[in-house]
Structure formats: structure tokens, C-alpha cells
Amino acid sequence: MDITFRQLQYFVALVDHRSFSAAAEASAITQPNMSHQIKQLEEALGFSLIERQRKHFLVTPEGQEVYTRARQMLTLRQELTDFAHTVGKPLEGRLNVGVIPTIGPYLLPQVVAAVRKDYPHLQLALTEAKTHELLDMVAEGKLDIAFLALPVDGTDGMRTLAVAEEPFMVALPNGHALLKKSGLTVEDILGERLLLLADGHCLRDHALEVCHRAGKVPGNVDFSATSLETLKQMVAQGAGITLLPACAARRASEEGYTVRPVVGSTVRRQLGLAWRASSLRRKEFELLGTTFGKAIG
Image (tube, rainbow, N blue to C red; front, top):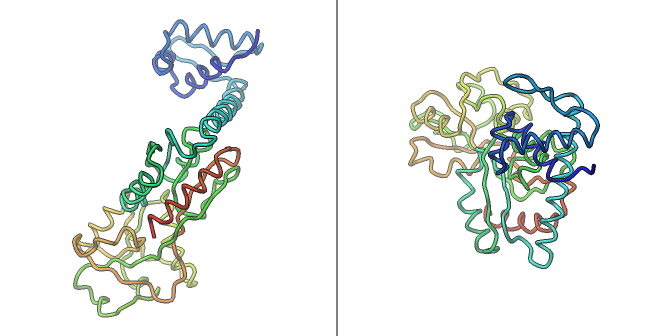
């Protein structure tokens, strides 16, 4: 019995949803049919993929290996299909794009507008998540490309393209004594209560790099937020200061705080795209990167 792509799709759906009923619903088939397809796949392979229990199942070690390889095969198949559809008509149809939260609200509106102008037949399906989550989704074929801050760990097997960069700004409460200065040094920053994003956000690491590049180790980090908007509100209320990428500080006066540049720092946030090295759409993504870069300025 031959193994079919459909059987592999059903098995991947089963592992992803961890439920026969949910996987069957997502695959638009009946639960008995889903069970039958998995059994046929097991018969074709000659070993069990799952350990069936009364109310749930466990994926066997062999099943996990098949799942990993099945995902790779399905991704390559989809890439080939997408490539065939776009030959002679680049950047048309649906493109699944991931974006990190510290970029999305501040740059996406202008980027999306530029893409619509340059490629009116391209439909962007956007997903917002942290960097490591986006990279996992790109690797698994759930996303075609990610828009994030570079450099970043976890890009083995991927290609990246820098499209723009921006400086960091220090955000301070209105009326703060340091606002008498036109620019702030790292020493100025280290003398204040520093508010940063929580661990897991790449922007936290980039912000700390401003201090590390100057040979300073900050010991004044006293608050970890889950979003830039929370950080800005805390600064506006006088809870401390923070480092913001320039794109997030454009409405400082309206949001109740003031910004100053960091004097003597060469640290800038590099913005770019990441996609699977195996993708056949490299030239398209490079075109998209040009549009992104022009939109950001």
C-alpha cells in the first residue's frame, strides 16, 4: 500500500490538534474516516504512529519522527505549488506573514499600504507573535515569511534580509530633570529606574545591548512589561524611563512622555524578513523586502 499526501496531512492534523474529533473537523472529514486513514498509514509504514488509550492517545517515538518528516514533505509540496502559481506573476494570491508585536502596531499600516500599491493582487494574512514563535511557524510551513528584528537566534535553515534600521530613543516622564539635556548617555540611563519588556521579547535584549556596548551592566531594571504600550504608560505616569525603538516613539507628546536620543551609541534596531532557505520564492521575497524598506523609509 502506498503512502499518500492526504494520509500525511491527516496525521499532521491529528498531532497538531491532539484530538481525533478536532483533527477531523479541521480536515473536513468524519471522525471514523480520520481514524481509518491513520490506520491505513500505519499499515503502509508497518508500525504504530500513536498509542491509543481510552480517552486520548500518545504519539510514539516513531510517530514523532514521521510527523517531523511529514511536515517537511508537506511544506516542500506547498512551496512547489506556490512557485508554480507565481511563475510569471510574482506576489499574487495569499501570503502568510508573521510580525513581532514591537513592529506590528507601529509599522504595519504603512507597510501594508505600500504592498497594496505595489502588488494589488497580493493578499497578506498577518499573524502577530514573539520572535521564536514566528520562526517555529516559518520552519513548520505555517507561515511563508516573518517580519522581525535582526539578528536573531534560531534562523538555521533560513534566509534573512535586512530592509531597514532605526535608532533607540530614551522615553522619560514629562518634566524629568534629564530633559534639560538634548541627548542622554548610557551613564544617564543607568542612573534611573529602567523599565523594559519581559524576558522572551527580543527588544529587551536589543535595549540592554545599548548598555552592554558601552561596557556597562545595568542593575537598575525594576519592571518587566508585556508590551511597549504598557511601558509607555508607566513612563507617562512617572514610574521610570525606558528605551524605545524610534517607530514606537512617534506620538510621544500625545501619549504623555518625552524622548531623547542616546548620545554615543551605535546600537540600532535592524528590521528584516526571514523565510525558509528551501523556499522557491526567494526573488519574490526580495521584491517584497524592497517595498517594505521604502515604506519604512
